[in-house]
Length: 421
Image (cartoon, rainbow, N blue to C red; front, side):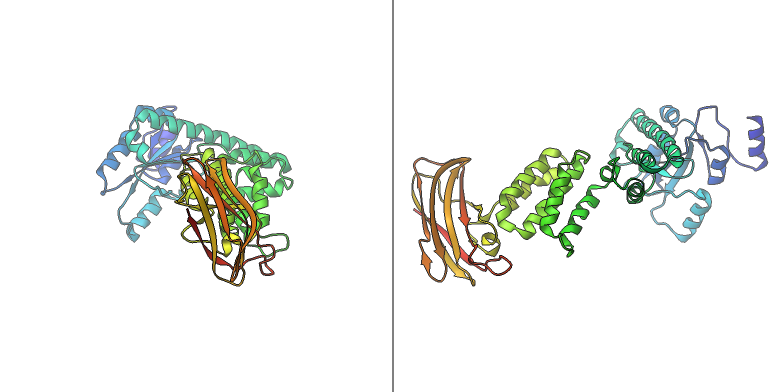
């Protein structure tokens, strides 16, 4: 300790060597290097001259005994963030922070945690900095630092390992909760894939972000390679959804991209599947943005087509499946109703096979016969009988355009639908 103090005095460093186990406040990167240990750096960033409360909160935490205890041997540094970053200030900060790359935060005050090598592994910011007690911030610091040390140990083991074992260690290091991976996830995944081409560890799948996972499906949808396209994309998404290695957030992204594909390529005929996917997406996590959007998706895209709009090529093209007619439906009270299909334009007529009325999930009435609505109409009126008042009416129509479509399976037909009593 005496020798270290003498060295510090010799170089004129305005720094006091702390007691064993206590953090130290350094004024510069040079000072920090003189006392740096395995606990790395903790940077306290605050809004300089444009948010006085930010400064107050940051310094109160930095001087908190609980925070100091959680920080171990870390080096503390202040990071004043100016409202306007001038060239002069950039040069001053470059000298002050040396080789350290100071991260940005979405809000200030913020705490940045860096390894002794300067790798940014955790950030604490946002409302929690202003509303939490110092003991809660101390717990976050302690947990992040413990995870960092575990990560550093795994990386050290990985440096001397090979093949699948190295891939496993890297994957475990990158998937530790509460801290950043040791590198960008894309680079980590690329390295793991090279080490583990058969994906025995599962980490190449587990680590991929929900955004990148959905992009992987999107690339299949938009590819012109043989065997790819939107149907192949949906099939691959289904395979991924059945894989237990993926997290709820990853699976939500898969449901979201699948809903988009169905909407783009199948349209109204995919209404039932879209509702199914929306419900599954919500069930995985009803509180995040995808979970909260599920009800809107089901409401706007989970219906077949609108009574006011009639049918379009998107509705009638494709396989013969029941498609729900969105309301409000003028079918609630007892009586006999006629559902009439009237062609308005297009090269093809619409072929109708059945009209079915449900009250909730209970079938109330249906009319099954072959009808056609084109420039000439044949049996284009379907009769539905209602014996008692309905609480939740749903009307489904089944078109069959197998013979009225172009070489791509698309039917050019538009028309209106009326419901009369």
